[in-house]
Image (cartoon, rainbow, N blue to C red):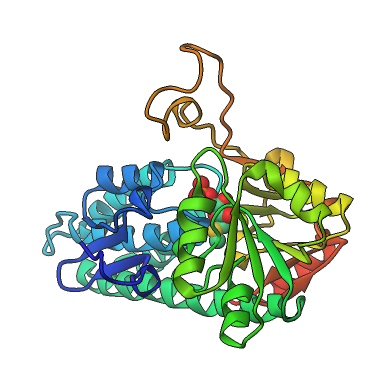
Length: 364
Ligand code: MRU
C-alpha cells in the first residue's frame, strides 16, 4: 500500500532489482485505492496486461520488456549442458508469444518483445547468465528511453500551444500510461512547470473511464487546472470556444497516418475539424508501425460486454442479454489529424512521406 504518496511519485512500471519482480500500480483500483503489485509468473503478467492493471501503449511495452527478463531469470537451464542456449531460447520464445497475445492493438507490446527477442538471438551460444544480464540492461534502457521520448514529445507539443490555452484530451495518455510525463499530457506537464496555466478538459472515456479515474486524477494531483467532462460533452465545450487544441495518445500509427487510439478518439477528431480546433496525436516512434499500411489493417481489441452493461454500476444498467458492441479502440482517419507529434519532430500530411522521414531518424 502506498496511499500517502502522490500518484505522480510512484513508478508506473518498475523492476525490483533485488527480487527480479515486475512492479506495477494496479490501475483498475485508481483513484480510490493505490495498490502496488509484484508479479513474476507468466499467467499473472498476462492477466495484468489483459485486465488493464497496467495499460497505455508505452507502459505495456516497458512492462513487457521487464517481464521477459523476470520470466527468463526463472527458466530452468543446465549451465553445463551443450544445448543450454537452445533450451533457454525455446522457453523464452514460448513466453514471448504468450505475453504478446495479452492485447492486440498497442504495437508497443510487440515492439518491446521483438527488441528483447533480437537481443537474445544476437547472443546465441553465449552463457545464459550473460544473456540475462544483457536482458536486464535492455529492459532498463527501454524504460529510460521512454522517459526521454516523452520529454521530447512534450517539448515538441508545447511549441504548438500558448499560455492560457484550453486543451482537451481523451482517455489516459498520461504519466500512468508511460514512465514519466505521458505523451498527450507531456506538453501539459511541461507547460505547467513553466507557468502556462492551461485549462484542461478530460473526457471521462467510456466504458473503462480512464479519463475520469486516471487523467483527471493525475492532472489534479499535479495541480493542473482540469475539468472532467462526459464523452458526449466535448462538442459543446469546443463550440463554446474553450478548446484551442486537442492532444491525444495512440496505440498504433499506420504508415499512412491513420491512428488507432481509445474508442471515442475519432469522434473527438471529427468534432475538432467541425470547430476548427487543431487535433494533435502524440506518438512515440515505438507506436508507429510502418508495416501496417492503413487503419483498416489494425486489429481492434473487442472487450467483454459487462464493461458496458454493469461494471461501474451497483446494478446492471442494461437489459439482461442485450447485444453489446465493445471495441476498445477506434481509427482516426489521417485527414482529421493536424499533426503527429513524435520525439524526433512533428509530422504533417502527407503522412506517408513525413512518418518515413521521422522513422529514418530513429537509431534503435
Ligand atoms: O485501453 P488502454 O487504457 O490501454 O488505452 C490507452 C490509450 O488508448 C492511450 O491513449 C494510448 O495507449 C496511448 S498511452 C500514452
